[in-house]
Image 1 (tube, helix red, strand yellow):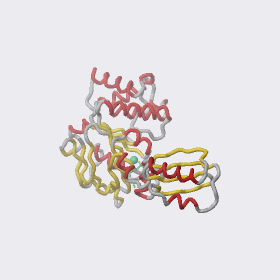
Image 2: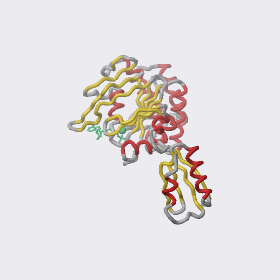
Image 3: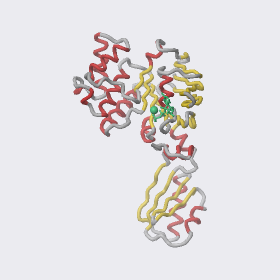
Length: 311
Ligand SMILES: Nc1ncnc2c1ncn2[C@@H]1O[C@H](COP(=O)(O)OP(=O)(O)OP(=O)(O)O)[C@@H](O)[C@H]1O
Ligand SMILES: [Mg+2]
């Protein structure tokens, strides 16, 4: 549905986007992940036509996206990172204004406004001025404004930044409902757990370039270490026995801190069986055990050597 071909954008001498290419199929939810300043907002602004790329091309259904007046742009809804709302107007008046900008009027405008308010759980507060809203409610209204014209592709630029857990959940449920209706979503975030929950595929950008483009499972598979077995030991014996354990097949790493043994495994089943068997035969008792999956945060760290929350 959407294709980006080698798009570039510089601000003066600063190259914000250095040739980004990726594609999104209809109905797919793509996560665009990267740390602060990676070029996410610049990229989505070029897709939404807010800024023009220096070079490269954005295509929607095979057609090149033109300037401001291109009717293709009506198929895109953008939820901007910076709230675009009028504080002195009510929620409903804000939506009426944005709906009118999209060319809606009369009964169609009223219907779309009511639907967007209900969808984001703001019907009760429709008549209240936005300046009386919490940060989370403003974020929800910001989302409602992007849905009025029923776009096929919805671009969300960090829609949950600085929101309370209740609004975050409301936004998430809304996005899952849009997904279920077959909408195509482009979701920008630096929260790994959000991308893991919502997205079919992840594009990771860093310093204006794509460093990975894969499914969540595919990204996780790239790691030499996919699971960590954490064992609280009752009686860790002295000596260099941990090295002996690390030499077993399927075990990638072993670390002993106080009485907690962390065993990095390539495959959970065979690796944990080998580790537990080895400990048992040596009479090392286990007080508690649990496993952790390598998450996207670990993937990012493995790809870049840096953490995503670098703020
Ligand atoms: N209007 C602008 N003028 C000058 N430089 C800019 C402008 N907008 C962005 N930049 C720079 O371009 C780079 C990419 O910024 P961008 O906002 O696209 O990153 P981002 O991935 O959205 O970051 P964040 O997670 O903080 O929102 C940054 O170095 C930023 O300082
Ligand atoms: Mg941004």
